Structure formats: structure tokens, C-alpha cells
Length: 343
Ligand code: AMP
Ligand code: MN
Ligand code: MN
Image (cartoon, helix red, strand yellow):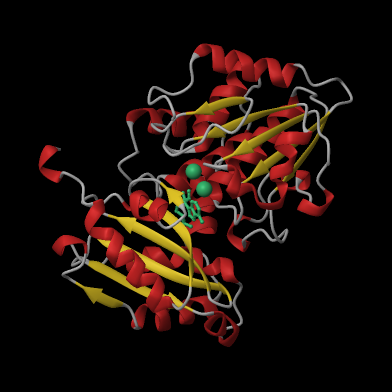
């Protein structure tokens, strides 16, 4: 399991050596988790730009599945490094993975861990399985971008506005715009350094949090309108949940990734500690998002059902009908209550 104290200086040194060991004409492949969010993509592109600044080899950035970047994350600096998974180097000199707790989050790209000469994993999930040759894993870090910053600093890469924009998108995504518990003084000090490069937080936040197509606004209205509240679930802490099908998406002409923000419209429910959105991805297959306000460790629920995540934000792939998926969640919830009296 992961050292709760985060990477040791020997781990940082090994990661620096792995990057410095890439030959002048060498090839680096950066991979982030499937269905990339702001932390996955921002951390990866920020690091890619950093490698370019110090002239490290040829850099490709990619993620498993269709090469589709959510609209809200398009236009990030370093986007030109992105290649479809099908074009990713089959035998890179170095592979670096971002924000993925386990190999299963790398989909069809997982074989690169074997074919690459060496690998470095940067992540902040407590459940990280340390699947790299070098692992920079810190569960106390608010975002993977904190680890990227640590490695870029040790590589002597100066922070510029392009890198900072990527890392800011990552940090503000995973802290919910600096609202979540992980928003420590260190997080604000890191954000201050990023802002000092001249990036524009108003523009960035509007783009990533406050922009969606009108069709998505109406779709959210319909899907939130059929949410169910179960006050007795989770040992009386309460569960609120809703679901969206591929047919719902089609009716409003929307792409699946727009539903990633849906959990934020549901989790504000005062009467429930746990919130859940069940999003259809195929026949009898659902991407499930779970959130907790603090009484329930939803990562335990997600792990028990084959997924992963953090204590208060987790997910898994559900199978069967939406009702069957929620039945399974209800069963796991009682076992996931935290000892709230213990602080
Ligand atoms: P999401 O609800 O998609 O925003 O995901 C919340 C958190 O749960 C993320 O930080 C992921 O680490 C984790 N997560 C979501 N889906 C899965 C999955 N299928 N397997 C493992 N972890 C997941
Ligand atoms: Mn992520
Ligand atoms: Mn993250």
C-alpha cells in the first residue's frame, strides 16, 4: 500500500533519473486515466510542456478509449501533444502515468507499462497500487498536479503561464474550485504561484465549471427532476440518486462527457450525505459517480463494487439495470459509515 507520507526523496530522485535517462532523440509517452477529467488532462499536458521546455525527447500524450476531449477542457496549452491511443508509441523509452490509481484505468494502453524501458506513476489516490517502476504517490495531495509540480521543480523546469494554466485547471478541478476539505494552506500557496504567472482564473473557471450547451442545461433539468431521495439509506445519513440513459443524451443531442458535471447538481441535496449518478455507457453498463459529505467513505463502496476513488468522491462501472446498480450501492453503504464521533 501507499506510504501515507507520500514520496521519499529517493523516489523523487529515481523519477528525475528516469526522465534524465531518456536519450536525446528518445520517446516519452504520457498516459492519463480513461475519461480524463481536469486533473488527469491538466497534469499530463502541464508535465508534457515541462518536458518540452527542457528538450526531453519526443513527447506524446494520450488516454485510452475514443480520443475525445470534453468541450470544457479543450484549448488547454499543450493540447498539440495529444495523439489518439491508436497512434501512441508502442515501445517508448519512458512512460509516465497521471491520476490513475490502478492499471485498469489505462485501458488498452496498459501494455506500455511492459513495453516501455521504464515507467513513472504520478497519483494521489490512497488506493494506488504502485504499478510503475517509480511511484510518486501522495494521498494527501489535493490533485495529481501537486506531484507534477514537485517533479518539474526537481527537474529545474521554470513555471510559465502555459504550464501554470494546465496545473491550475487540474488543481481547481480536484478541489472543486478550492471548496473541498483537501484545500489546505499548501493548496492556496501552490495556486498563488500558478496565478503569479499571469493566468486568468475568471476565464479558466468559467470555461471549466460554468459553461455547458443549452441542450445540456435542459437535460440536467430533466435528469435532476427525477432524482430520488432515500432518507433511511446509509444508516439514516440519506442517499439521493438519479440516472441518465444514452437515450436521454440522444434526445438532447449531447455527448456522454457533459454528464460528468451532473453529480454537482445532485450532491447539494441537504437531506442526504451520499449522492449518486448512474450514467449509461452501453447496453447494461453504467458509469457510476458517488459523493459523500463526510459521514460515509464512498471509496469503500466503489472498491467493493470493482471501482475506486477517494473517501468523498469515488466511482465504478455498474452492470445490469440502473435499479440493480443502485440496489448494490444500498447494500454496501451501511458498511461504509465513518466513525464521525472519532473526528
Ligand atoms: P467521477 O465520479 O467520475 O468524477 O469519479 C470520482 C473519482 O472516482 C475519481 O477520482 C476516480 O478516481 C474514481 N473513479 C471513478 N470511476 C472509477 C472506476 N470505474 N474505477 C476506479 N475509479 C474510479
Ligand atoms: Mn481524475
Ligand atoms: Mn485527481
